[in-house]
Amino acid sequence: MLGAVVGLAVGRPAMSLQPIGDLFVRLLEMIIVPIIVFTLLMATRELSPKNLGKVGGQVVGLYLATTAVAIAIGLAVSNLINPGTGVTLEQTDVETEQAPALTDQLFNIVPANPISALAEGNILAIIFFTLAFGLGMTMVRAEVEPDSAVRNGIDTIFNVADAGAEVMFKIVWGIMEFGVLGVFALMAALFGEIGLEAISAYFFLAMTLTVAVGLQITLVYLLLLIRGVVGGSPVDFLRGSKEALITALSIRSSSATLPITMSDADENLRIKERVYGFSLPLGATVNMDGTAMYLGIVAIFAANIAGASLTLFEQVAILLTALLMSVGTAGVPSASLVMMTAVLTQVGLPLEVIGMIAGIDPLLDRLRTMNNIAGDLAVSSVVAKWNDAIDLTSGVWADAPVGVGEETVNVTNDD
Ligand code: ASP
Image (cartoon, rainbow, N blue to C red; front, top):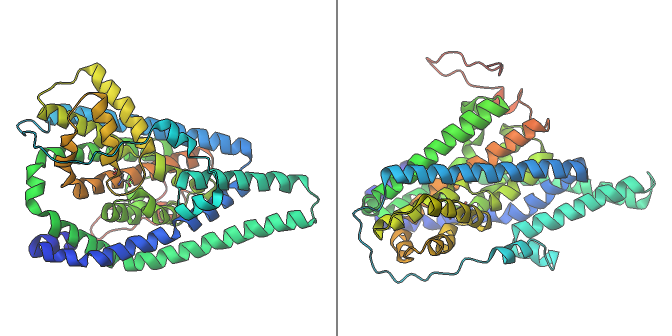
């Protein structure tokens, strides 16, 4: 908040704070690969291939379902607010990068060289190899003699992973201390750069996304999943996720937020490593509810600008394309802009729109990324609940604060 105020007051000079924010992002990026490898190895220690299949199926199924709902909400809100009416198409020289083909993306999940996947930070390929390696270890471990060198070696690797994950979380805490400054710097630089003009020019677009994100978070995550399925308090869930949500809001990257998302899942939401070690790295790359919703909203926005109206059938086609595209979107800032080409082309809408909204994207991307992270944590909580892997008696679920002048908070979860 303070960052936004300073940015608006100071204007462009506030952009000189950007390097402090960039340093924060870099620190987080530094630990993405090790934290995924260590926690995922720990997850495989506890999961048999059968259980992994079960947890994996539930995670993927819920990820897809919540994303489809998000797009439907985005389309419904857009049909009500109708962003883009009255706006005229500006000729912009957009470099419309081609969205990668889905088959290529699927193929790339299998790394030709695991070491280069690690070096390049290719998250899906890292997940694939680490899972294969971890499951391989659990299988070999079950087959060999108890005191054999192989068994001892495997136990040592798992112990190293355990220690490594602990150390990474320690580092995350250190980074989060600095994060306060990083978040301030990023917010000040953002508002200093875009100012109020860009916001007012695309007010209805911003409003549509804000309303849709608000609905998705309150109705789907907080009420349906957390209150309804997990049986926890939505306020506790938000308290437990706040570091990750604020970070997502400031750095606009699901992948770079991942270390903090994992730390919140572990320390605050008390989800077990065997669920979040798998669900969160996967979610950071494939589960993008805010992104998918935005792809749908922009399609309606573009149609309104072009004076076209989209039939129900076309909107369903948009839903499906946006679903697939969001799965393939990388968890990096403004990745949606690339994926948008596919959605707009699908229904024959002008790609110039992408250039028009690129200016306000640094702002809207924050809401999308925050929604993406909230979705990952909500689904992980549900799957953890289904697999007896969440402790609702500790972490944020247990120590609800009794605020001044508030009623006593019920901490027994016996709603
Ligand atoms: N920045 C988003 C994320 O990292 C992706 C996008 O919507 O552009 O989750």
